[in-house]
View (cartoon, rainbow, N blue to C red):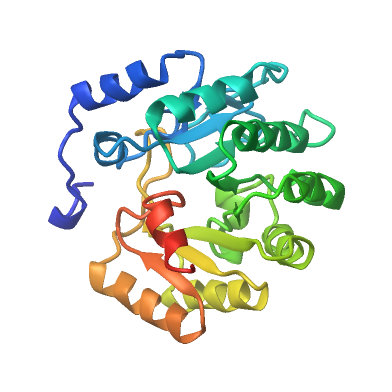
Length: 282
């Protein structure tokens, strides 16, 4: 299946990737840019930005769209929070995005580790703006509260796709559980911004995509990202269609009319230009 011209991106320069890795200076730290085979890696790395992925590089779930390694994860590394803070300092970042693999093997789903990373970043620089992209923690309210109590600036949890496609795309997740994660975060997190994102081109209809926007608005979500699904390898789901840029513009306009802040486009991902998007709320 050949890509349309608007989905063709230049191959990232290896020198930019090497430069970021050298600045981080810690080969054991993971970035979602590399682990998930993100198409924006060259652009983001050339701008000196990246999204850190904590709790290892092995996920306990098997979502059909994701390029992260699946299997049995290792125990959390207690030195990781400090090493993340050091890497962020070396990169000179002011806005930090932290995500993780899903850790259903841990009693709190890794929530305590998220909190430790946030705490270390605050110790390093109280002025950091911190966004966390969290898993659903199996719907455990106490785990969500652990992360919120650490006071990130933005809490992101991706809805990923429309309800009808969950059994195919996210068989170990729940659409309602993901919506509730966002709703509870806003209810418990005070002034925190909530954020979510989903992919199109997986077989959903336009009506179903708009339905998700309505649901996110009802869940009190502030920011929504919408991007084209692109398989990270030939072994992953093939996209039934490539969404025209005009359709992304339509979703963005409809979402904004609902009162959402929407960032939509073929290459948009949940943490793509995250600092720029969060900044428009201030």
